[in-house]
Image (cartoon, rainbow, N blue to C red; front, side, top):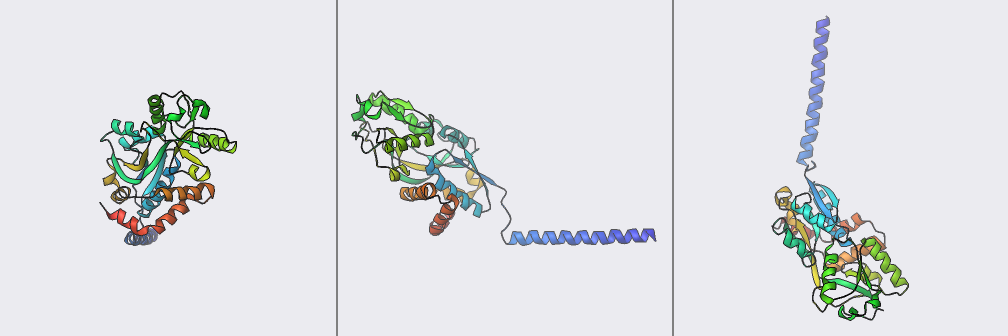
Length: 295
């Protein structure tokens, strides 16, 4: 009797375990058939501390997640981003400026790929409030007191700070270069404009500074400052890792005006960055679908 009872117990247990296993397999199979299984590939997007990188990062993150990829965002300065691309620690980074970052591009030539140009004809250089009388950099030579004898910048390893040193030398200017962060620079600008005091700082588009203040970019007679483009940097292994997103970052475009509108709505109007990205995706879905398929 004891043996029979044990036999029945084991038999019933086996049947129950088999049924549970079949049910789990059925759920897994149904999930796979419906395309609901997650992709275990992790895409790492680089992010240097500049506002203009936010829109393409948020948009690309949502598109990658639509394809089931997990996305991580890795922060660091410009030098760190270039090095990380060459070591495949960062897969993609929407922060390469071919003119400003020429030194880095020469150093790491062939160690990563260039993706699409997000936008071009973006003005870069030194900016002042419109009430400052100078219109060119040359007018500051010997008249550095017009801007209190200094230039307000940000992270010392950034491309614009490196170019600034080149511009100062080319023009023979006697200017103190004050480094810091993007936030500290903009705080200085905000205070100076509110007091109508002179200030010289790094300026470019796209940025909400040109929407919030009356500014002008000084003409550079030496031709060092000018216009530039914002491009994707892509690690050499990314094509095989995530082919759809590789196609996407090789075709992605977003105008300067669209980036500035996004930043204004996010920073000044307090709208959610992810919701703004989703709205842009919804408005540009047909183009995005083409970018994902195009080689």
